[in-house]
Amino acid sequence: MKFESIFLPGVDVKRPLVIAGPCSAETEEQVLVTAKQLAAAGVKIFRAGVWKPRTKPGGFEGVGSPALEWLKRVKLETDMYVTTEVATEKHVDEVLKYGVDLLWVGARTTANPFAVQEIADALKGADIPVFIKNPVNPDIELWVGAIERFYNAGVKQIGLIHRGFSSSNMAIYRNMPQWHIPIEMKRRFPSLPMLCDPSHMGGQRDMILKLSQQAMDLNYLGLMIEVHCCPDEAWSDKEQQITSDALKKVLNDLVIRDTMQTTESLATLRDQIDDLDNELLRLLSKRMRVSREIGHYKLDHGMPILQTQRYDHILTDRSSHGERLDMSGDFIKRMLEAIHSESIRQQMVVMEEAKERPKRSPSNG
Image 1 (spheres, helix red, strand yellow):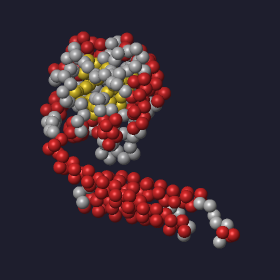
Image 2 (image 1 turned 135 degrees about the vertical axis):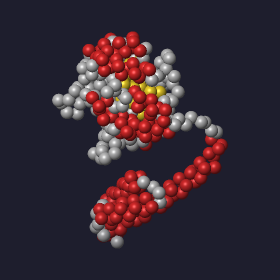
Image 3 (image 1 turned 120 degrees about the horizontal axis):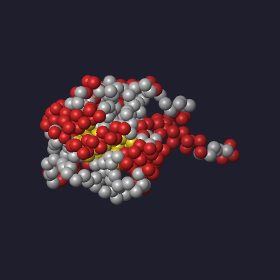
Image 4 (image 1 turned 30 degrees about the vertical axis):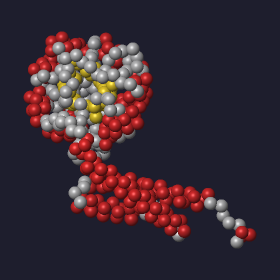
């Protein structure tokens, strides 16, 4: 796929590219006050949710199409570009009519191929950039599928927004970062700009700087941050919104590491990594051979493959040992889960091969 660069005259693409504005367009005054504050802070792209379907009914679900008039005023009075979220064909028709400059597709929509296709079809023939948020669930192929649907519809200016993934574990993040998924997306689509949405990821305003810094350290192009003129009075997601002054502090405190070095300066260390990776693979191969031997033993003695007590012991013991070796317990747990899954697969192959092996007849001794 050949993508086109997202080009907005007057917008400097140096990192971080910033898209900022309130979670929801609540009133005309709130939209214009916030936009003018952001314009004064140097922000060039203003965001605001016009349609805001919530997880449960009863909350503020957006003003709808009338708020597009407010975005039109933002363009006229601040010279900013404006962007909002679309989730249906009707939304697309409305934003194109009002001259919205960029669109984004939300996480819930990305998870629904029918909705993505509807939006893509509605955009056929329209020359407008589209940013695609990751799906709510950590399914990279859904994210890839959304890119392909828009591309096939003729949309060539595509960007990605990483806002984290829903999880039952919300002790720290509103949406778990799972950085390995956007990293894989950057590997598959190196030409697509990647933005981070630290507001939805952290769910708390005091996490925005930390998450923004992590995104910059991973070489993201920019940030989409929720900014409100009076965050504590916001009608939706007030805990994750900040003021324009707070945004300026976040941007001033960011460390942008753009120094480029030749790969020769890292060659020795990377050679060591290559050698260690090869050794890890050899050790894992040896471990799988032992797992297959265990599979044969279980087969001969009528034992089931899964031994939960043993697996629980391995997880607990190795996680503790890994933490003593300065690795995170979460990393060790995920690594062991993957290894155990492959061990189970290897033993299942042993069992299946035994079923297919022809039994010897008595006459054959």
